[in-house]
Image (cartoon, rainbow, N blue to C red; front, side, top):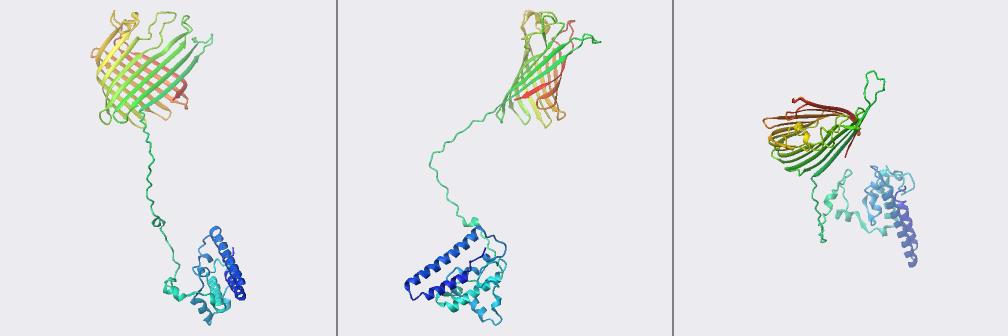
Length: 442
């Protein structure tokens, strides 16, 4: 890009053209128009170059502080005359290209100054009538500074130049909509485990073919206002069915059957302590029959047990271990048996369907992540009316294979001295199952 478009040559030629035509007023006006048009066009081209193509490279012609002299009113400067009067100055000190042409000089600031001084020298000699002011006037008005020996850096804090706008008053009505927080959370987990056993007729140890299925569900609806009050509700369902080849009456036998509802209201007392009121209700869903018999040994509401406990709970939650210990010094245990012939089996007096116990209980629930893939969840329950004891310990070991597939080992020892075996003795009861199946959480 050629900078300044041979400003010096353009001005001299224009001035000469105007002087030759000065005798004709009409031509003088036309020459001025030509000068103005050419000069304005030069400025436009230089401005376009500066705004679109020019980039600061540390030194170039557009950063020359003396370059402004070509664009202000014609002024008599001392430096051009000083150069002319200097004995050691020669015309070769000027630029080596076309006189007054300021092109291709991005790194020749001194040559540019020399060319500008040469241009003003010619104007002073040939066209002095166009000079309207002098450097003395500028110095008197502090127009030029001569005390700067080095390039000055201009640092402008734009924030100090900006006036903070006044806030705009809004007169339109603002509609505020408030949303009440939802303190309820819901969670659902469903599981399905399948198993098949097959023995050939000539299997050396013998055996019975059977298929089994285990369905589990855990539904929770919990309320917590993040302050003091919490209300937790949990419905737990386990139903296992198995085909029995030796039973010709019932195609399926229930291996696991449990329906349990736990409702707990708690009020925070301290950091890890809460006052609690807990209601635990348990029964089964389907009848249980021995092989080839229609006499049930268990059924829906035979038995049914509901325990209301009032006390305090201590809870702890860590990264891999969490537990809640509920201690209830006041506990009310109500047992109900619907089938008459099962009353004695479940410790209910003759001619009664229910029996009450008042005592105390302790319930411990914990979850322990033994490995990234292995989790141990347990519930331990102890009740006593200071005459009898009921103890249960449910353990579920879950080995997670992936998001939907897992293996579960269930161990459930239990003791209840209100129940008797066929010989009339109290014995430790035990149930266990191992399964592989699907698991879905919502």
